[in-house]
Image 1: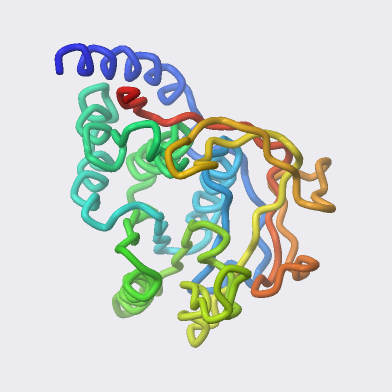
Image 2: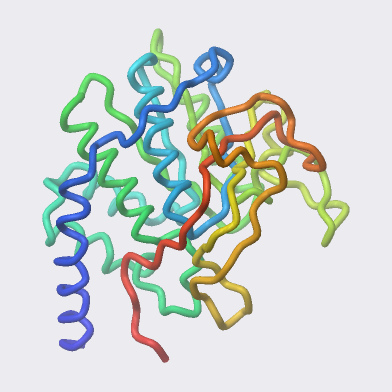
Length: 277
C-alpha cells in the first residue's frame, strides 16, 4: 500500500506543473448561434485522446462567456459526484487531486482504464475549476451521469435539463462515447439498441460527432487489455481546421447533426496508473 501511495504521489507531482500552467479555458471555440441557443448538446467522443477534452474545455468556457448557466455532463459514475464537487471547490493542490484520484473510478487497474479517467480528463476538470474561481458569476456545473445503462443515463440528463431555475435556463453539454450520443435507433451489434441520444430525441438535442486525423488513443482493445494504440482518422476530417464545428450531418453516420474537428489525436494515459496485475 505504501508503495502504491508513493507512486501516486510521484505521479501527482508530475501532473502539477502541467495543470497549474494550463490556460483555464484553452482555445476559444467559435460557436454557431444554434448551439448557443440549444439547451442540450451531445458531443460524441472517442475516449482516451488529449485533443477531445481540450476541445471540450474551449467549448464550455466559450459557451459560458455568452450564456448564464452551463452544465458539463460527463460519462463518469454518478456516485463520483461528491468527489467531483469537492475537487472543483478546492485549490487544486496535490492533496486535492489525490483525494479525487484515490476513488475507485480514477484508480482502476490498467485493464479497466478505458480512457474516461485520463490525464486530459483531469486537466479538463482542473480547467473548469480554475474558470469557476476566476468567473464565479459564470461558473460551470459538472455532473457525473454514468449510471449503469442508457435509460438511467438519459434520466440523469433529463433531470439536468429540467432543473433550471426561474429566469436562468440551463445549457447542458453532454460529453459521451459516440455510440451513446447518436440519435438513431439500432447499431451493427443490436438493431434494437436505444442510445442515450435516441432516448432523449423528444428534447431535440443537437448531436455532434468528433472527427480527427489518424493518430493514437488510450483504449481497451480487448477485455483485459487497455493501452495506447493507433487509431485511424475519420474520413474527410479537415486537419487544417482543428477545433472547428460544422453543422452539416457527417456522411455515413446517421444520428448526428454535425461534427467537431480536433485535428490529429494523441493518446492520453490514465491520470492514475494503477498497479499492473
